[in-house]
Structures are given as C-alpha cells and as structure tokens.
Image 1 (cartoon, helix red, strand yellow):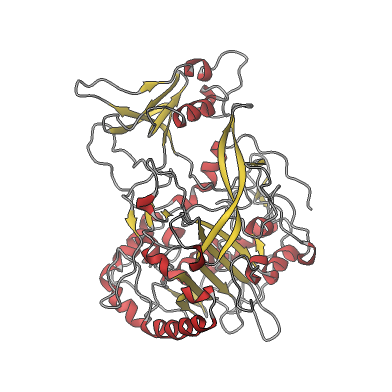
Image 2: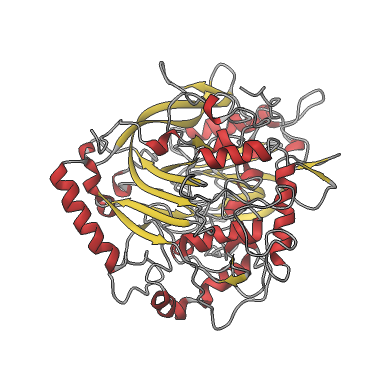
Length: 592
C-alpha cells in the first residue's frame, strides 16, 4: 500500500483541475476550502447524468480528447468496431498544485475576464479593446516586454522570473527548500478492452463525457459518465529557484507501446487529414527518424531498468511504468536557414528546417526532443522545436527566453516556451485565454464531427449525378419561416432554423445504411453513407458540412487528392469551434 495500487488516491490527483483554476466566474475559493471536486458548473454548457449513479465529484475529470488539437490517439486501434466507435480514445486531464492555484487566486481573481468593453469577448485576450481583466493585462504586457531588448518579463526586470509585479507580468512561484513552487500535471488515460489485463496498469474511476441526442427535447446534451480508466502517460512540470524555466519530467506505461495505439492528425476544422499511424518509438541509433518518437536516452534507460527491477521485487504496479525523459537546462539548437515569417507557416518551416540538423541537436542533448509517446505522438509534437503555433516572435525560430537570451529549445520545454514567449504565460498553457479556458464544454469520448463552414460535400456517380441522400423531413426542420428562431446570429446560421443541426445530426447517426458525412443548408440536409462514391468538398456559401470521426477530409471538388494542411493549428481554433456549436451560454454561476 505504501507504493500505491489501483484506485488508491495519489497526491497529484488531489491537485486542482484546470476548470477549478479557471472557473467561469471569479476565483475566490481558497485552496483549503476547495474540498471534494465538483464539475457541475465547470463549463458554460449544462451537464446531466448519462447513467444512474454517475458522479461529478471524482478526482479524475477527463475533459480533453486530443494532443492540444494536433492529433487524436486511439488505443487498440485495429480492434475498434467499424465504423470506429472510439471506445478506447485516449483522454487527458490537467491539474495544478496549491502554490500555483493560490498565486492565481490571490493575484488574478478575475482570471475569467479577457477583453472587456462593447462588443468584446471575455474569452479573447488581445489588443483590440482598451479594457481587459488583470490576468489578460499581465499576459499582454509580459508578451510585449519579452520581445524587447533584454527579454525580461517586465521593464528593468533583469533575469528574475520568480517574482514580478503582478500588474506587469505573470511569474509563477518558484520552489525552494521550504515551498513546492508551481507544479502542473497532465495525465493520459484510456479505457481498456475486455481482452486486456487491468492488473498491469494503475487504474482509477474517472469522469468522462458524451454529447448525446435527447428525444424528449430533440436536442443534443452533454452527459457525464463514470468508468475505470488506465493511466498510460504522465507529464510533470515544476518551477524551482534554481530552474525558474521549469523542470520537465515525463513517464509512460511500458506495455502501452505494444498496445496498437494509433494517431490521426486533425486540421483546424477538426477534420482528419492523415491515415491512422501507429505510435512508435525508434531505436537508440541513429535516432534521427522524423516520423517516430525519439529514443529514450541510454542513461535514462539504465535507471529505468534498475528501478523497475526494484519495484518488481516490491510487487507494485509501478514496475510497469518508466521515465521517458527529463529536461532541466535550456539548450539552443539553431537551424541553418531560420524562417523570418510571423505566422503558423513559419513555425512549421522552423521544424522542417531542423530535419537535417536533428543529429546535431541530439548531440547537444540526447533528450532535446523529449516527447511522451502518448501525449506528443505525431511528427509535429515529437519533433517540436521553434515557435510552433506562436507566430515566430523573434523571427529566427527561437522560442524560449532564459537569463536574458533567446534559445531554440526542443521537446516539452520548447513547446511550453511558446507559452512563455508568444503568450506571456510563463511556460503554462493553462493561463492563456480561449482554447477551453475558462471552460465552455468538455471534450467527449466520441469526438464531435468536423465542421466545415460555407462548404458543401459532393459525391457524384459515373454519370455525374449527385448521390447525396436527402433526409426526409429536413426541409421542414431547417427552412426558416417568419416567426422562427434562427440557429445563430451570423450567416450561414442566420439562414437556418433553430433545431435543424440537431435534427440532421441525429438522422445521420441513426441512418440504417450508415453515415460518414452530411451537409446542412436552409433547404434541409443530405447525408452520405459509406457506400457513396468518393467525396469532395467545395466552397459554397450557406452550407455547413460535417465529417464524422473516421472520415478523412475529402479533396477539393474537381480534384482527386486533398491538399495536406501545412500546420496542425487546431489548438488556436478549439474555442471558436466550440462557441459556434454551443447554444447561448448560461450566466456564470456564483462562486462556490
């Protein structure tokens, strides 16, 4: 028991969930008053139980379904029923410790307020308005100051990032001999299939969500469920006085590498744009394959072997877990041809420019590209370096500031460096605005369909005739007549009757012949079963098209192959997508 077994409550599980750190209201509840978690008011969309006895007060709230929007990963992929039922989609949760929670509560209680003023959205934080909340203001000021000469967090701040004027910059607390400092944890979980041995994993009862059709209201509702999930990956980052740029540590389940976990890359619409690809870690040498996760360094593998042998003698489930990497110091591996752009394409160019330099970077630090096999799986994340989705703030592919100098850091630390230099949030992705902060709706075990606005799906037979199947009753459900409520305030939603989208989605999900995609417009909706000819998509105003999970993004109409998007940018789009599919948000609940 001293080493913990399944369903034993671990210390990090008692940390505050990100929705407790960033509630939809003022952050006023002191850490010692938090008590048992509850997520009834964690999101602006209402929640209801999906099964009798389902609880909201569990310590593990699995409300993320992707690797920061870059890809989704499914365990035991080839054993999933067809069409893919997502019964073993890997889900994630993020938590923070007392020191980080209290820092935010004490200094930025209005953490839920971004932009303020007429027409402003509180989920945005930018320079488009004159008013903003304190956390947003500090973020923007630090972001601007970091780019200036000297690269300090605040004017004349030097290299100190442990203590900053709270109105000028976000400086999470540093750990010392007497304090823990800021700690963030990200855990990856999945449901095991009946054929798998649960005794090989640390398992725990967890909370997860589905968005399901309710026949009584004829609307989709978010419902919560409880089930046993297995821990397969764990990230821990900690800020210390001697490492104010955080120490990054990551752990994996040893056997999960052979569990046929496969990932699919998604674009900014949530559409799948790659075939399912097995998550794999390459051999130690030469370790320069850019399509697989890099090898665990030899010195760490040696430590793992000793620790797992010892844990095996003790007889604990933790013998089945290993350390995948540690990043403490900041390294700088420059590319030979840095990109000078300031957009997402520049971020991808910086990664691609390092392809031929991968061996040099690994020579600098064998853990330079540290990535968890189940948390950073696709080539974008497992080769991370440069500014990524941060817009290349220094115009030379550098992404991190330490001791007043810029660096091009790789792996987990480089990725979180984007939060430091491009977002102004001190290596944390929990303190920016948008991207589900504060919470709008939880991600679900079955991902939502990809939504393509002002886009029509085509499927034509050999004679060139469209073969979409019109859904009976959809014209009445979708056509907007005088006195009807529209689906939304802006086109194409302002042309379409409220309730139409729920009607069409439910008809697609229950179609006897199956449904891989459908489109909606003011005249109704057409669905496309798996037996349809090859799909294509075209830009047509007034249409909204949906691709169900497992359906690749079709090529443009009139072409035979879909262009591959240049950058996995969905992290920056997730809030916009969720807001578009949500009803009008309910008022913020009172602080508990």
